[in-house]
Length: 286
Image 1 (cartoon, helix red, strand yellow):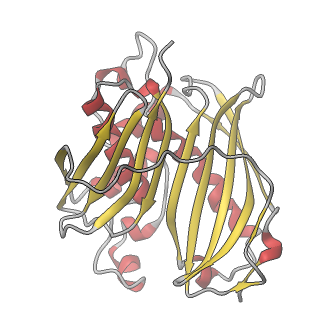
Image 2 (tube, one colour):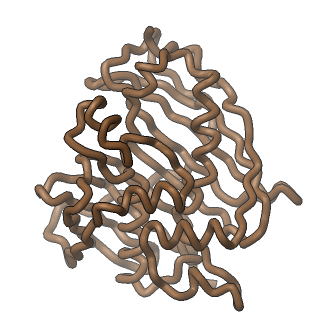
């Protein structure tokens, strides 16, 4: 059945996640990011900027109960774009309440588009922690009605630099086991990333790396290149494209670096763009 425009405004409910040190460190190791501050339980434990995608997953899974799409149509959904705004870094041990709502639907050549807004606040005082605008594409699914957006405020994404040769191109090898490791460490379970039979049934030749795992790896590399700490990150933007195979190399292209942030892209082992319009924004100097 088509994705109805009337789905805009639907609440996906809420979940409460305990961001304990064990989960925070596991996520960093699953990226993988080996910087010592991400494992320093004697001091102030740093948190990988992309950790927010991990506790959001439970709400995404639960949202299938409210979706008007059939199971087969939902399985055709792919993560098309991600925009994360970090209001302040997660603190080890705190409980975070995450709420979700559908804020827009649209139509693309390949299928129907859905925009979902997640808002995370501290359970103790409702202090904003992060917000995420996630774009999903449901391949081969029609949109019933006209494209529609709910009223919400969202900061404009920084403009990408004019096309030019990367100032740096950094290789990163994706091990055959990296999707399994990321799945268990992030607690994000989607069998097309770890189960050969499921991946082939979905039309893939083998399991592929999660889009958020590719994004997190690029963020780790970008912050290291810029000489910035994980806690400095306040914005992560990306559009997802070509698949990333396990047991292959990706290249993180650093396109521009300044005090405000890093523009980047990621290419898979065939040179196809796996991540486009990538941006890592930093907190303004105190």
